[in-house]
Length: 327
Image (cartoon, rainbow, N blue to C red; front, side, top):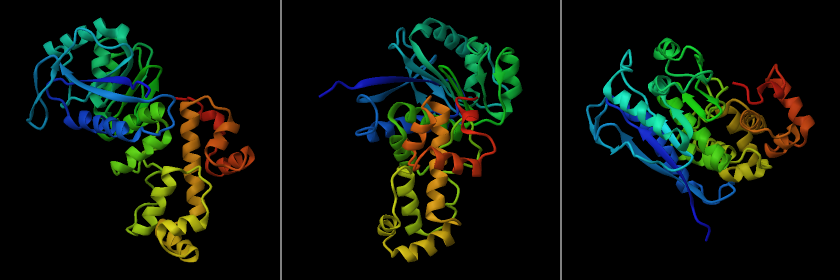
C-alpha cells in the first residue's frame, strides 16, 4: 500500500478569534479525508490539522476557552498556514500576540507552501508584510483597514475569495468554507469537493469570480425530495451522460412524471439544469487550470467544443478565455 502523503494545515488562533472561521474550513478538510478514497488525485493523501497560537489558552468570541498547541519551532515543508478571523470593528495589529505570531511567520516562511486567510485574518499577513503587490480580500468591514495596512496590495471588495499564487484570502465565515472547498477541489478533484459540500449540506460551491448566488444553490428552493435526489445525483457528476430514464429511476417515478415534476419544482428542465451545472463546472476549470477548451468541454460532458461554445454564449457575454485564471 502506498504511503499517505500528508498536507499539514496549521490554524493560527489568536485571542478573540471567530470560532466558525476555524471550525468551518477544518471540518471541510476532515470530510475531505473521508471522501478522498477513490478521488481523482494522483496519489493518496490527506490533511493533518494543527491548531496553534501564541498563548496556550485562547478565548474566542463565544467566551469559550480553547486549548491550542504553542507556535512550533519547526513545521513541515510546504505546510499550509491558515490565519482565521478576529472580531471587532478594528483589529489591534500591535498586540503582543500579533507581534509574536508575525515573528513566527517570518521564521517559518521557507516551510510555508500556502498562506490562507479567513475574514479579518488577512490583516495578520498584512502586518507580516506578506501582501506587497498581492491580490487579496477580507470582510467588508475591514477592507479600508486592510488597504491601510498593506498599501501596495490590490485589495478587492465584494469578492468571496481571491487567489494570488500561494496566497488565498476570503471575505468571511461562509466564504472561508467556499475557499476550503476550492482548495479541496484543487487537491482531490471535483467529485471529492462535491461530496464534502453535499455532506455538509452546502449546495453552494463558489469560485473566486462567482456571484454570491451560486448556480449550485439556485433552483433548489423547493421541498420535493424526489427532485432534490435527482439534483444531488447530477451535482455529484454533471459530466455524466444522464438519460431521462436513469434520472427517473433516482426519483422513483416515470420519466414523463419526472419531466413535469422537475419543471414545476426547479423551474427548468433536467437538460437545462445539467447544462447549467456543466457550464459552472467549466468556469471552475477555466479559473483553476490551463486545460485547452477542447479538454474542458470533454471533462464537463459536452458533446464537443462547438456545443460548449454555443451554450456558453447563451449565458455569458464574454468568451471562455476571458475567465482564464483572472482575478
